[in-house]
Image (tube, rainbow, N blue to C red; front, side):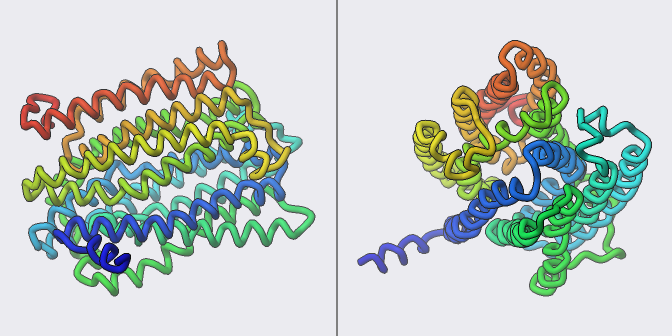
Length: 448
């Protein structure tokens, strides 16, 4: 009986079956990755002091900026390649992959060189509010980290290729393997009495690079029809990749201002010591977002495929199911809040104290994120993101001054209040636009 029910799950249209297989695969892989990320926190705290750990979290926020500086080409490739494969044009798909690899290489080299020069000449200690006596080699840590992330920058497009192939589980596997190698390396470091921030940074940044280097030949042997080549670089493909890609880039950069500057703001406005409790609360409640991503990540490319083929019934049905997922996860957030003190103690012991008010605000913030992301993933799949782009830029302009003001009134928790307010704007506009598009009443900016 159970066997028949399981078999029934994998019957139906090809898109839904592929979506379901990737969701199940992603659950297993991301489940392991969640365990790895949770273990990395206490093990890293065994290697570093809370002050050093706060600095590493702040540096990691800067690295996320670099990792995202692809002018939207990664997401542009994801949509364009999905469309090419949906109509069976593999030759065009290979040109798109080749053009993306080339453009990303052209972008990252001068960016990394400029950043290395800035790190060498600028007063990084003052910018990050770091005590030179406690961290004497900050310049070296930053340089090594930037160089490693720069090298990974181009190769991570492999993940976008798998996303376009509607195989997000494989992309998740690559990320999980990088995290796992980092965990093994950090654990090995923790066995030594003297561990430096530079060693920790090297392991964290070199691990994903190693995995992508190994993934490249495997990927383009399996999917040889997409193997990048210098002679397949095509300027004509840049129009499609950049046209949609630049919109994705603006959304991405605006999101970075909102999501990745919090650590830097806390370090500058308060102290690196305050970064750790904020990040621990963020990672704890962020587990629901990881769980949601497991389910929703395959929707992007599947939605592009459905939209290209005009399958509106499938789109509407999937959204109804996503509403049930969001409602369930909000219940999970409530339970997590009620058990947060016990969870923190079990996770990091007494090394870091997280205020109850910070936990409550973070739970509310994650519920808003889940709601807004549900609709934004579908809009990105449609390629209708002009309104999302404009709203994202407005949010980015509002966030930092609002965060500075509210942190002056409420302390670190004011940062979270600012996040809740700014992300609520896009949550509302995303829902309105999605409903208009599905009802075929979208006009003007709502249909671009």
